[in-house]
Length: 257
Ligand SMILES: Nc1ccn([C@@H]2O[C@H](COP(=O)(O)OP(=O)(O)OP(=O)(O)O)[C@@H](O)[C@H]2O)c(=O)n1
Ligand SMILES: C[C@](O)(CO)[C@H](O)COP(=O)(O)O
Image 1 (cartoon, rainbow, N blue to C red):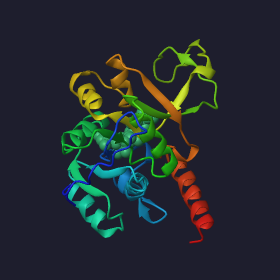
Image 2 (cartoon, rainbow, N blue to C red; image 1 turned 135 degrees about the vertical axis):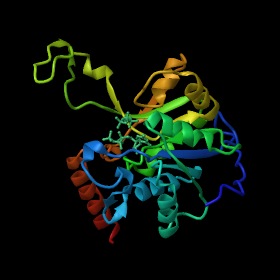
Image 3 (cartoon, rainbow, N blue to C red; image 1 turned 120 degrees about the vertical axis):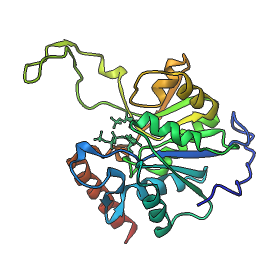
């Protein structure tokens, strides 16, 4: 459960960032209000295993990731450490557990603060996206290694989107615009960053945001997309958990166990 000894950097002359080392921060401190009553969302079972363990494995499955920082529910760090000890996780990956904060933004910042030196690429991945495929993780890392300061996996939208004017509760909301759907993307995690850029964003950007990449946008830097994946969806509402169970069952069938 320690970050030492740090793995040695492996020079990659083909990339924009040579010798880069990657850590993943997993914010897992949310309650999961939209999922309904129960344990903190990250600790709820998916296929008999806590969602958080799936998310950790998804990061550790990438050979690029050598450290995972788990941001636990504020009073749940000891429970999360016990959970990590109880589940098989790759030996080549180091793990740290830190307590989280009141908002996702605050939790990510606490995870970043705990990162030891020596990691110049940081992935931020929701515990609530337990089924992201390793190819998506690798694509994000590759784009950051290639020199992008911030990278998000993104998918085109299936629905038409309307902008509305807020209305009193129970009143119909007037539609004020229909943005051009071909220019919109739904973004997922892991989002990947040059570490210094993400640290600067968290230190300087004020106001609440819903993802880390938007903080980098506010610094005036360009965020780029790589293709996201349908199975990287976020478990937010009860139906998402039904879908996640079905996806996992199909994977297990295909893998023969
Ligand atoms: N204070 C918080 C709030 C959220 N998260 C994490 O951020 C990710 C995305 O958040 P979301 O899906 O909104 O989770 P919750 O905040 O738990 O959901 P809800 O808003 O329904 O309570 C989750 O992995 C969640 O654990 C966090 O680490 N700290
Ligand atoms: C970071 C995120 O998953 C990207 O889509 C999303 O913005 C988190 O939003 P939430 O409201 O905290 O679930």
